[in-house]
Image 1 (cartoon, rainbow, N blue to C red):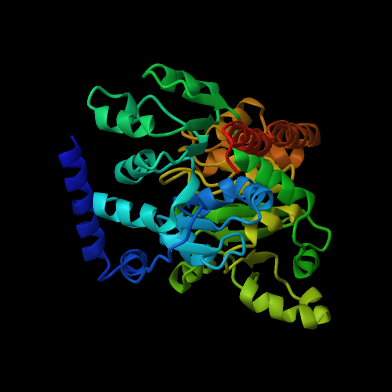
Image 2: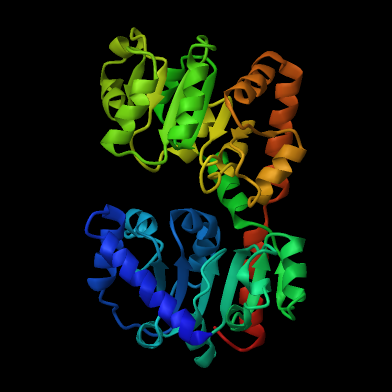
Length: 418
């Protein structure tokens, strides 16, 4: 099985390499690894994140570990360009790298160079050679916010190699009881249900969000519908609401912000009512001209603002549900916004929970979107109940970060480690 794993890794690299000639993200993925020089350190702490979403998910643990071990170097690796390119200069790390391709040679060289005291991987990413090398070095490896599903290869009859990968993990901090039961079913019991660290992250953000004064001007005391992390199918649906609710204002924060995608979004919206953040924010020095404008739709054409923008919203639509899966519902939920999303949500426990609480709502088409939006807009009792439920849900699920960091530090003390 290891032969096929190694073969698959090389085929994957070849596909990405060929794609790099015409795909920007693939080019960044290839060039970032080719140009990477790892600086040798001793006794660092290694955090790995698949992408930007996992970074934000694991960030509370990263920040706490940084505070608990101030004298240790922190090394961060990313698999995806979307994580590396945005967080490569984060002050939370002493060095940030692309994770090298998972080969025996690369894993040996990388682990030998950084010699981590322990390693923390968030949610996803199970790499045979890196995990095996950590195991050889007797380096503790922790999975935080882990979650498992019955259909994953670990639980198939042909998943022996992948079960072996799990065997290299020192301890699993899991999101739910079902994941713990699945692991127990294959003989892995070094695990506990600690919860999802995303709750800590979004709750902390909601208590002290970054302000955006020009958005206050844009809101101007009116209700705001925020469409976050949207893709074209989401945008086509939400655009139909604009004329139905003329007393509301709308903020779109697309998942992709290249010029073509922004122009396509603008074409969906009523002419003369839409402004782009990059242009509108420049009017903050001329507030009178801004207040007199007819703009009631704002498009956020940059990355990094969305999590704080939800403080200005009243209802949120979360994109991705007509593609691979919905994006982060918890950022909006932490501010008490009822959330609407597309049909592909089953992999996300929090989405299932929110639907059960009648604080999250899945829609499949334009008609269903209008029905639930009407209900939220016109039925104040229903809307207020949804807001209370969703905010309480987030607050009640905080605490995973403390559970994880307490366990790590106490275990190291018991073993006589610093």
